[in-house]
Image (cartoon, rainbow, N blue to C red; front, side, top):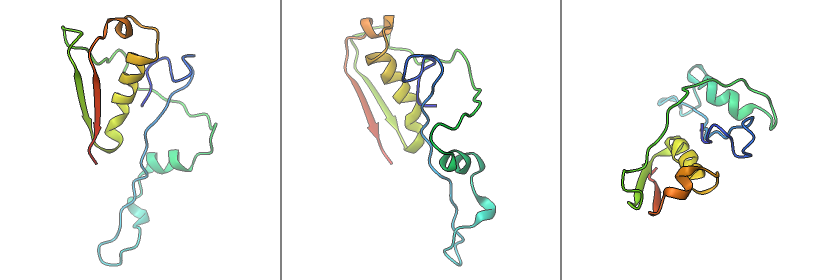
Length: 113
C-alpha cells in the first residue's frame, strides 16, 4: 500500500498501490511459466481501473521522524518496496498533519532497482 490511511484523495476511502506483475520464466524454454504466476499481482494488474477491491492490513503502523525534526531523512527502496516511503512522503508534504508542520529537514528517496 503506497498511500496513508487517508488516501491520496484525503477521503479515507481510496488507496494507492505499487504493484509489479510477478512472472517467472522457465530457464529451459525461456517461456513464462504460468504455474508460478503471482496470484495477487496478476489479479491487481488485470483489474480494470475503478474495480472495487476489499483491502485489509496492519493498522497503526507508522514511520517515525528522528527526535530532531530538522534532521534529513534518507530512504532507500528497491522495486515495490518504495510503497511505504511514498505514503510517508505524502504524509510529510501533502496532508495537513502535525508531522508536516514539524519536519524541517530534507527528505531523500533513492530507488535502487
